[in-house]
Amino acid sequence: MTRPVVVGIDDIEHSARAVAAGAREARLRGAPLWLAHAYHWLPPVVTGVMPGSDSPEGAVRDAATELLARAVARAHAENPDLDIHDYAMSGQPGPGLADLAEHAALLVVGGRGRGGFAGMMLGSVALSAAAHARCPVLVVRGEGGVDEGGVDDEADPRSPAGHVLVGVDITQPATGADAIGFAFEEAALRGCGLRAIHAWEDPGYFYPVAIGQYPHETAAEMNSERRRRLDSLLAPWQDKYSEVHVETQVRIGSPSKLLVGSSRMADLLVLGGRAHSGGGGMRLGGLAHAVLHHAHCPVVVVPESVVSQS
Image 1 (cartoon, rainbow, N blue to C red):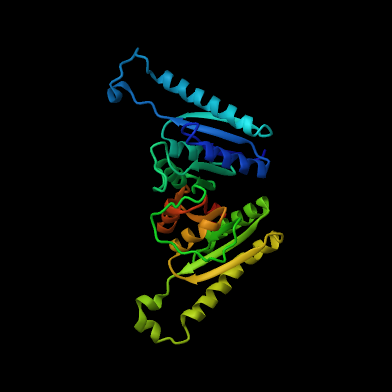
Image 2 (cartoon, rainbow, N blue to C red):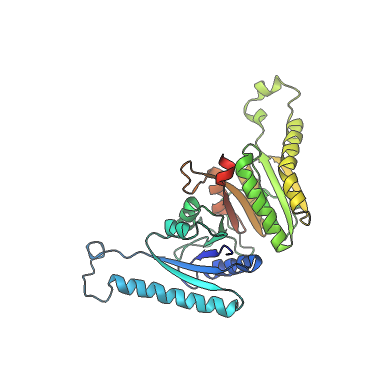
């Protein structure tokens, strides 16, 4: 059975972009589309609503079911060729979505909830889902040219539009391999190019005396060595996906600033996430947090696979 694409929704209007993104990914993969909504009913001791009133737990569950029915009807109308299912879950949305999508091809969530503001940081549900997930998580960010703001960013003006962008940490090849593989597959499915970026901060800036003792380790030489290592990580995937045009960039500077800036010209940005030692979800480091909060395009975080940890 083809693994599904799971989309977490909160309400019809705020989730429209996430559903559209999920439908596109499902069509690309020939996969079923699952729409999921988590409802959280609080007991009377918390809410002050007494049993027998108009708002018992059953009414909350019925409202969630009705929300999903309307979402499915709308998704079917816009995507009549897709196999669409709905799932209502009781509990916290982040962990609940991650559990439902454990064996999914992709989990899709919106970048902010119904209380969010354009240009502001990532919503708590999206961040929680990304942290708990054991499958790739697509966070739908970007507003079609609206400046997300929040960080100073850097972009290469030569970056081509309409491509998949992948950030590669050559010091963590196990984590990066899964992200690189996903990025190549996504570029092949979309019929677009791939841009692989590695950014690093020059240690000579922080330790000028120490670096000065080793004249052969100049910034230019170190940059060339990092480019060679990046090329070696990409090589097997280029052989597998020979139809994907690949461009690379190795640059001294802040990884988060370069990726956020370059995301202005990308259709999708892909990052790797370190798996928790117990196998439950991902550890999202500072780079992932910065990109998830401030990227100008949708972001996929790909968890490190169990195989790559061994």
